[in-house]
Length: 415
Image 1 (cartoon, rainbow, N blue to C red):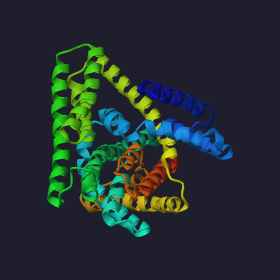
Image 2 (cartoon, one colour):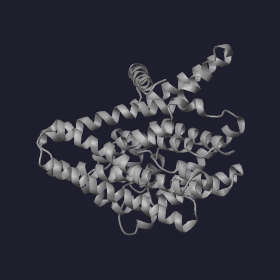
Image 3 (cartoon, helix red, strand yellow):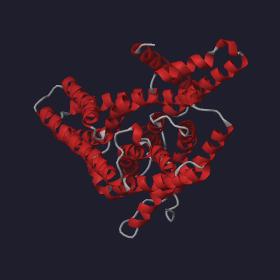
Image 4 (tube, rainbow, N blue to C red):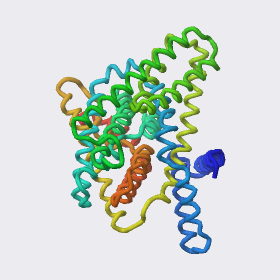
């Protein structure tokens, strides 16, 4: 299938499944679309098992693999999604919560990677270094899923900022940690191998370079927008910043996700206040909300169909089910330790540790990273476990975190 045919098919299916969800399931849009896609996928697998001569599963698997989910997300959709998410996080709110966000997005990601990696290595017998790669795959929370849940949870502004800010930045940091560990675990499959010192330099270059590029490009676009009062052109400039900046970061081998977040934060706050008229702000906000919703729908549709890439073997399924608990334990360490370290210096909202642990949803980036791994004997197990964690996270955690948050917020003595 051509790129245009695949894109058309995804958009049509996202619209059809979205309508089914709206009319019958009444679930949050992205979660509903993913559930319908999962049901459709298992339906096709069941039909293929009943009538093998149809070859439905093989044809569906061929179409799904031709989409190249990893490339489509990491080198295309992710930049727009992160930019759109960052655009609606205010710098003033983020400044007030910068220390918890920083610790959870850096130390927290590292702790989560270690806990999950060690636990998965013990569970499966996988070499520790490769298991740490798995830890890096499932440690980042997905800003798309998290921000979608936040809209319904009615959380205090400080807690909402912590969750949104951390989810935006730990995505980029987690991707850099993943690159470093893949370089160490699979040195022949990547140019990033070379020991701890070179890995540390890679991390600094990727993360620091991405932030610097995002701030620089965002500032340049902001300065141009101050000279213009044309909402259509200014919307186009923000789109060019998201697309062009992301691809430039990829070309320069620095963190494109961090670039997108930093650029989006600058344009959404300083750019909106000082570089846009009220009319332009309205159009920019509406445009990026629409882009976010459309890409969100397509992304969760693709996650639902990636079930065709999963290996359905009993050992893999058992390991995947048990790894859900390990992933939650890793998430708990990523949240609890930074908050407990800061607790004596500042106050936190009731239930913050429980809400942020259960609300740390995994999503498309984890599936994309798992699919991008070099081929090895452990790749199918990592992909299956990752997929099961993501599906559990989006469906179970995603549908229950809002009522959990409302319940915990009424108990002020609980962290």
